[in-house]
Structure formats: C-alpha cells, structure tokens
Image (cartoon, rainbow, N blue to C red; front, side, top):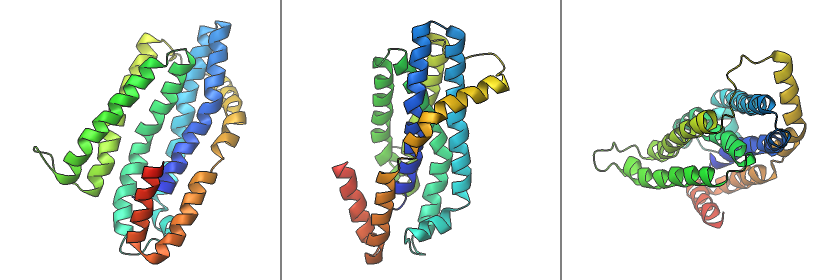
Length: 233
C-alpha cells in the first residue's frame, strides 16, 4: 500500500486540480443566473473529469510493472501491487467523480450536504475495513484487497448520492445532447487554469522519490515509512 500511495495521490491531485477552475466557472454561472449555461458547465465538468481519469487509469493498468520497478519495488512485492492497483484503477472513477460533483454543489452555496456525504463515506470505510481485511460477521477475508474495497465501495455509494443530488435537487445536470463546439469551449476554459493546478505534483513526486530510496532497505522499511506518512498527514 505504501508503494502505491504516490500513484494514487497523483490521480487525486489531477482531480483536485481540475476542480480549481470548475468551482469558479460554476459559481460565476450561478451569479449570472444562466441556468442552461450552469447545467452545461456542470455536466461537461463531470465528463471531463471522467475522461481524464479513464485515460490515466487505462494507461496505468498496462504500466504497473515498469512504473513500480522504477519505485524500486521487488519481484516479491509486485504481485501484491498488481492486485492492489487493479482495484484502485477501477475504483478511482468512483473516487474522482464525487470530488467533481461536490465542488459543483459547494459552488452552488451548499457546503453542508457534501460534508455529510463525505463523513458518511469515511465512516463506512472505517467500519468496512476491518471486516473485509480480517473476515468477520460473514464477510470474506480479503486482506490487502479488502482494504482497497473498503475504500471503493462507500465512495461508489457516495458517487451515486452526489449525482442524484446534482440531478434532482440542485438541477445542475443537463439532459440535452451536448454540442461538440460548446463542450470543447467549456473544456478549454476549465483546462486553462485546471491543468497547471493539476500539474503541481511536487508532493506525490517527492513521496515517490523517497519511497524508491527507502525501498533499497527492504519492504518493511517502505511499510514503516507509509505508516508514519499516514499519521503525519
């Protein structure tokens, strides 16, 4: 898990970076009172985030071994990393889309609902983790995969709740077939600010470099570094 953290953190930074401009654009559309433009921007923001993450996840699935060999992961650890990252690359869609949706809800002036959804997701994660890792109360003992599934499952629920809220309560999602020119214009407006913000990868890169140095001393050292990093974070 400590080996995979820099990669997972990088994908999270990508989503957060795209959210910088998205919140600004949506908030301005709300201020202008243009509901159609607001719905188009919100919908296009979701599709842009989904597309970007799918591209990175697809590339990631086919580059797991060379990527983690660069981080000095040994041949004994690589099979575990593969199991771990396949779940993450599949589940990252369900982690990123709620981030996109929540920024839209906050831009609309509602900070309470996203906070409640996030807390429920985190609480469900905390409850599921020991059950799926160790196997208890009828749950299967999945160990490392259980830890990842305990994160992906509540965020999948969280994603559905956020999309339902955007569509039916906030009416921020468009039902129209998107116009290509308008969509590309919206993407460009978001990416002008979002890409530089998403490219600010100094933290995950520094963690990755540190991990590769520490890996010289063995997997146990990497595990200790990962644990200490979590506590510090």
